[in-house]
Length: 422
Image 1 (cartoon, rainbow, N blue to C red):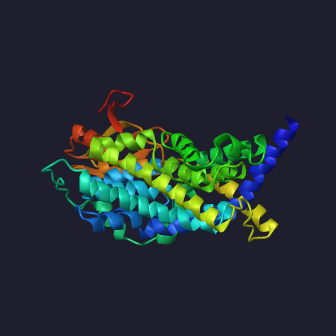
Image 2: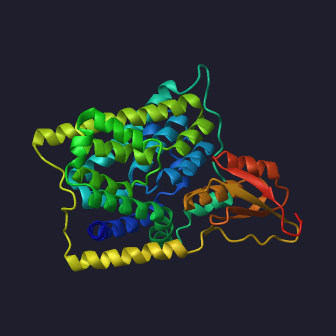
Image 3: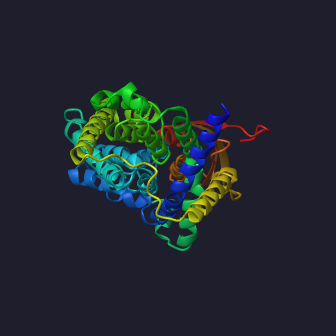
């Protein structure tokens, strides 16, 4: 037991040291992208039902640092603001599989082949799923519902670039780490446990190779939520213990791209047929990509060299690991409120709602936006920790507010103040 604990601790620390410099760089680039590529920008390009909208949705989705928990409300908001079902599906498939932060971590732990192959496959699977929805996802004679572009103040403010550096740093080193910190820590711990508990190449004899191992990885990845970045150290540990690169890729694709909550939300906002196409396209794309990657490594007679990309001196890796731990700790303890608490004017009133189902800052931001865009609302605030939303305004309809939140896949219940006042 003491030997296992030592190996476990060493594995966790080494994984953290190797991925920290790349993950910190990924956080910085993700912060810049959050300022340059906002949901409002994406919405302007995804209206309609054509194939070009599907292409743009996949291209937009690949670099964005959104895991499946965060992509659900963003995709629902895109749909609400005019994106077609095909484009929304393409965005839902391509976005959670990868992001600029996970691409860099993939390079640090799995090498350049995986780092290139992974985003290419995410793009291709998004195109495939979106094209299938455009071709077969609509009932006979149906048409896209008309949507109005967002003209609310919250959308108009998106063009304001004042304080963009501060917003980029805040997103990259507070918001994004806050959304993935728990999943990332769990992923590193799981990878450490696999590395410490199993002998090298042990899983090669247990799972075997080829499509059977891929189906096992798919069975694990599809129903369970795994963050795109957190899945990388787990995949590296599995490969080190004998899992083929293709089977690991299947896990890297299906884990972030699918889970029960995602499929349920797709079913709710776009229908049963689209949900079936979504799930089927992810599964088939993952198998095809896994077989292709295994064939590539077999043809070259190469192996994935995990934990072999030390381009920085040891002291720099150690410093980056300590800095990353500080970033994660700071994000974990920082209050998670989106928007300032409304201060209504004398002619306005407030309403409080208990919001169920939010899991990350993107969820809270999507809920706040849906509330702020509703008629009669002048300001809104959402607290992720308490699950409470507060709106202020005059003439808003509380049922309409609840409906707007439920369209994103959450539930909203009106909450009375402690003294019984409205």
